[in-house]
Amino acid sequence: MKILKGIAVALMVYVAVVAAFESMIGTLQPQAGSTLVITTRSDDGSAHDRVVSRLESGGQLYVAANHWPRAWYHRLLAKPDVQVTLDGQTGDYRAVAVEAGGEEHLRVAGTIPSRPGSAS
Image (cartoon, rainbow, N blue to C red; front, side):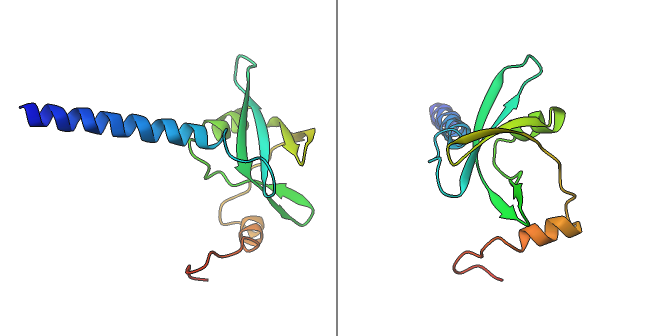
């Protein structure tokens, strides 16, 4: 019984550490180069900043929705008027979802450089 209790405590600590790390990853990332800060708003109007990777293609600015946790993305879908801080300049934007698997999605996905050792 003591061993099971120890395993349960260790598992809970592990889950708490992973959750804390993952929730900080979007706020403590370096804000330069290929990142931007996107500010979304909750229903109560409070602002939430998230650092995400940026892609530029065809004169348009894109971010991938795979930045976890995705609360920022759900707020963005609910309230698409956001602020973006890019290279030290902040501006107002309207976010538009790109259809997964659609022509635009495939074009933008094709601009992402492959990582060494990954299949092309």
